[in-house]
Length: 256
Length: 345
Image (cartoon, rainbow over all chains, first blue to last red; front, side):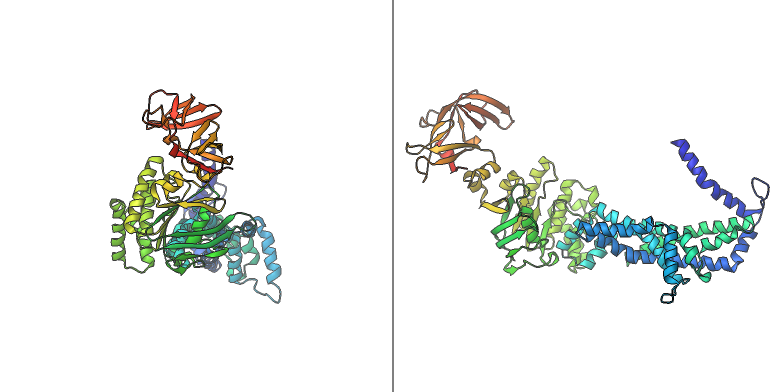
């Protein structure tokens, strides 16, 4: 067990460590490790207009995806939980799981077919990109929250609150949201991580001006190694920032 | 405030189950227990009163007002659930204060009221504990305090003691009764534990297959059950098939002919003979009239501490006897007045 764990960690952290080294290395050719120290790769990435634009696009997409996940995912999970009929529950679960089961490529081509038509000419807009991210991530939100509701037997607490004269919205505010707060929080972390790293669909449907960071990152690998490493390190940082941001969002929603 | 079930029927969809012809009145301050085996409809009765089920026909009246179709949140009933339902993210005090918060009472006042309510169930020192750090009995008390803090119109108890161990259950019975008496509130208590119902209730309704088959005080139910099923459900009983003898005021039983009050049963009528085990006197008492003395052999002898439970084989019949006596015996006297005749089945 210990050996497997060590191997796992080695495979997980070696690339990250090498990326960090590479991003600060002045030259890295024909040596095992890079030589010299420099900030120039980071400066180049930061001063590159397409990388800057992609950075902000990604942040926007992640924040919007998280907010929409909360606005859609919580009511959806609650509706599935509260529907008394087992058939409805099953159908809703399958619907929510489909985006995970269907390959991203299929979904992406579908988007291209539908939204490049004359009636729906929205391919390339940032909103379509956000919609695609929401569709990809919503199953995680719904499943996490739904499992938590079922495990906590939420309906029992709701019944109790009803007998104490709490109206539907009061029950939501005082009982339901606080009880599922932890799972909202953890699903937002998951959604942010998925959205920030999403490449396949974004690469297919993003417009030139709304490309997300991973899409632009691909270009970096055609250039200098140090530049590519620095750009990737920034993606890692972005993922951490997005996670923190989504945490803040879910906390605000809980209080509101 | 009084509760009244009027000709209430409830049919479960696609099934013959439900509750039928329920007419039941619970007076202000009265403690009424509903008992019955699982599936007898007692929980359905509670759901219709609390508002989580709507009767197919008939009406539920609370304090003179028809509440048959009123949603649960408008009924103003204090309910203690089987699982207590304490909100895990609120302290004991906040749990008790929650119904007051909904009623718009300001924070200072509701916290003071909650503390007072917790004090009444001897939990003042536990006010800041979270529910999960309280024992089962303590959670029970918090639930009781929460159900009563807003002066509800009636109190509903849904198997509140079933999750507690035996010793604590007995203690909590007294506690519930004490709190109910001081609140002087109409109370419906649903339980499957007949001993609990006997010890706590003013009146008991026994349900079987969706119907109330007997309603009366604990003593009435115990001493004069309407049929064999009630007799066996409430307490222990020797139940024999018998026949009214031609001899006046005598009944033929598998253990022999016994003298008792045969009431209006004509000779030859088949009956069920009921004798409670504790009413049987071991040995022969000199001062008693010399009838209803039976002789047998001891088939089983169990020492239960406070009593000794003996099965005596008399002819083909087995007679169960509960006695304090530790002496050996082979004769028993059955007082004529302790023999009850029920309809044959």
